[in-house]
Length: 594
Image 1 (cartoon, rainbow, N blue to C red):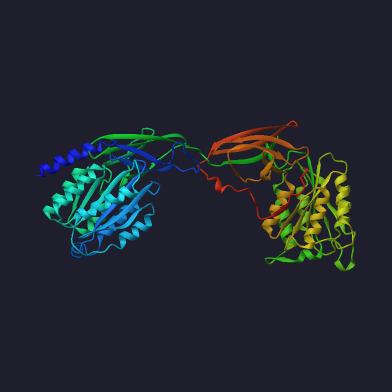
Image 2 (image 1 turned 180 degrees about the horizontal axis):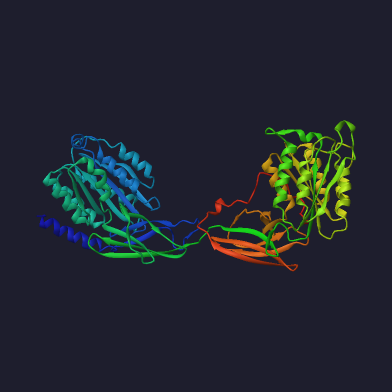
């Protein structure tokens, strides 16, 4: 039975100290109004709960027995491991100051109060074990340090650990002083000494703390975590009235993770004190869905998929000069070009009027025939079999008269009113002294655009590539490099089909070509899709997070109308958003007038 006189003194001390602030709980992270923008489905919640003092700050003093008896009772120093574990489990976002007092026959402030938890851990790790046990000296030293460096309005707690019995009266006197100052003492005792246990139990009870006896030293790490430092028994967390989940308690801090959904989330922390009192607090957290949307663009002409909404005439001009015998991965460039062109002929819609011209394909190179260019198949909408036959018969033999071929090709278009495009596939530059740049400029005056594909030329930045790029620029076309069969196929599709650009405001953010199945991942917003055709065709599309939109531009009876097909996607982080890009490199310095 506790000493009646001592209890009387304690009651007087508690009255003098005041009744305190009662149970309080505060969520410190996330802050109220916090917005989650990373697509997360869970939010980590941390805070402080206390039935002692305020909750804004937590001031803790470890009062650690360093008597010699610990060498026998705790040879593996679980004492230090337990205290360190508690420090490591305190909420990292809470404003906590910690100090360390060591005591044996006398006391020493081993670490003045600090917010540097690593320095506290270092101190706890190096505590000595020698001398006798003087609990009162340890408590008194901790009270003095709290007086010096404790903060007004903080919850002030002493964590008292010992393995033995001390002078009862002096220990009780120190507990009275703690009670007068509103400081709680949590007690933890290693061993089975009944008298020592009674002293520690009384000190804890008298100051509003709890007593935890441990017989096995290996249980100390868990015991330190189980001490309810600030008189709080439990904290639960719930979201929008959901089933509460238990938060982890360490010292006077709590932490837990709760699921959240898009929109407003009301997070409630509900605390229960050791005396059964309850208190709750709440914050609102907003979750903004930052998923990307997906956009695909396609075109229909009278209900059929198409790669252009204009009436188009496309002439393919193929380099069949002797250099096309060059090898790429064991195959000649000519063989690769023929196979790729044949495949392309099957994929082009019948509504595109197609022609085929070649140069360097009839005269041996040694004859230096600079007029070696022939229209192999004239324009027509249903001439694909003829084109495939002509492609199969190509044999690389002669020179590279690019300027002459461009001059002659101008006549192939005749008087057609269709949008006129020429695609020149070559592996070299002009070899006959002509001026292909001048010829390309002249073609531009007649509304003919020339796109060049530099095939198997190595470094796209070398002098030859610059010469070919100048030809494309002169006509308002594009220069594209291709170094393999796959790149040649992509380059041909890019130059033959109508390209489009996607703008947000005045900034181009993505692009592609009709007929491609590439999907563009874009952030939430309003976008303008512009076909680089003559005249340009525009459509607007609005993307919300997780939207999957297929924008379809349909031409019926000469009129173009946009419509959308919409679905929903799973969450896709916008950090993953990339513009579609194939293996080719394209010069887009000039708009595609198709």
